[in-house]
Image (cartoon, rainbow, N blue to C red; front, side, top):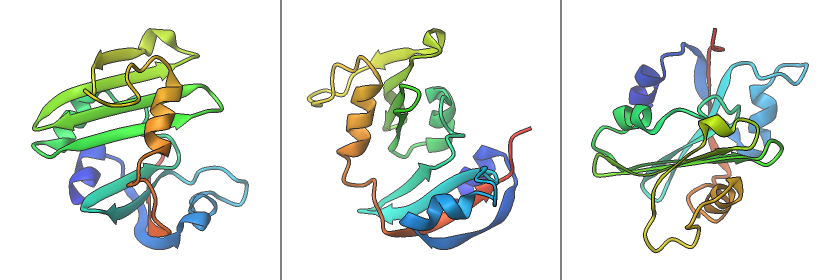
Length: 155
């Protein structure tokens, strides 16, 4: 979390607090239902640190930026939003980007499709749906309790 805070560059709004998953979005929003800032839900699962980007602020960050964050650690960024037909998957192994996929139906000029996850049932990736399948089928992407971590709104 220290490395992420330094890399992310937005000020922490309040210290992380333990929140049940079912309450995380409500706790991250104000009385009008608006995000209070960039909201991450953080927990450990099977030796991985998982950051769930509740507010979507980490979407569309290029793989090379994530590579600078990951350093020499293995890293996966995966997410989707079915309301806007958006999906993304970045996989870094041993300091190398092995898969970079971004599909945004509203902004085709930003779409990226580089690399391949050999032997993966989601390949070939052609739309946001394959990224969604990756997320939904991932056993690591769930914890009943985690830390809600809020950072300042981007300027």
